Image (cartoon, rainbow, N blue to C red):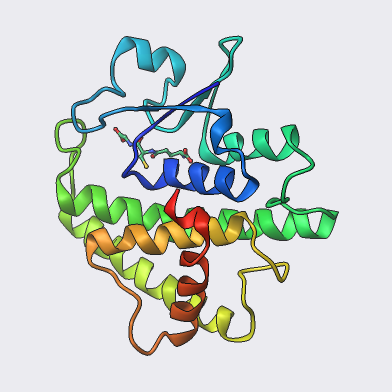
Length: 205
Ligand SMILES: N[C@@H](CCC(=O)N[C@@H](CS)C(=O)NCC(=O)O)C(=O)O
């Protein structure tokens, strides 16, 4: 199996961290795609993922699966004897999915928009709107406040243990530093949680 990814990009990091938590990193050959050079825009790559994004997983029979959470789902279902990160019971599964969606829509997406619209990184393929990017940055800061309050009484985002929700939140907080949005000194609960997740070996994957 191959995973087409970009080492510095946050979505592939979510997949690597997920696989690392499960001890599955050696199951895939990781192939680096240079986004800035547009290696994700070639006809060969677009045949794997018409959305032109990383990551993409290519199975040995040629099946290609894009979308970070779809790839994570593949590993969760294929290796049931590993640490479960998407929940065991119906309530856990639904709770984690709720958080994954909240985190994607209200935290990761504005962080990505802030990056794309203020950095000019992809200006060869999009029309950056600085003001929109800055506004998205404000949403990111607000969500960090929400997370700080939420983590005041718990060690993990949900289900009292490490889940995909922690991976998604952690990789987004780390990515937000690129647009100079950092955990504030008064956000002590968020900082403690961040340090806890960062100390896990999967955070280095
Ligand atoms: N919804 C997709 C988003 C993937 C995505 O946006 N990937 C970024 C890197 S983190 C990318 O490939 N950007 C390249 C581009 O926009 O040209 C997922 O969850 O995997």
